[in-house]
Image (cartoon, rainbow, N blue to C red; front, side, top):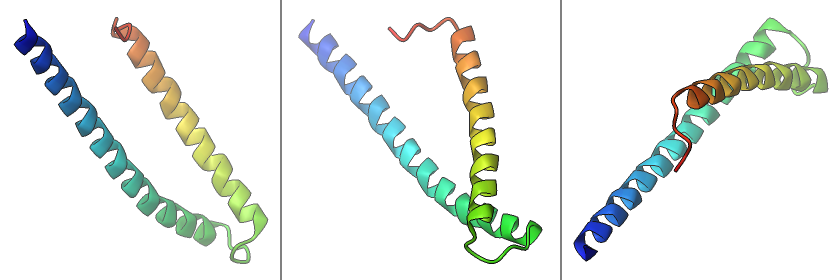
Length: 85
């Protein structure tokens, strides 16, 4: 019985660790894409570099994309029948 609990704990620790590693890699990829998207917006909207308007446009675009994908992920999570327990 004790061995079974220890195995479950080890598996959960492994699962959590992998989740944190994947999340960290996602942040690195996100930062790389951030630079690319900023450069693209500055190319499309030829405003002075570092203007407030360019940053607002960028924030609005990214907010819309993130909101869209967040809603899709939440919807698919609700649909899989997993209640988190």
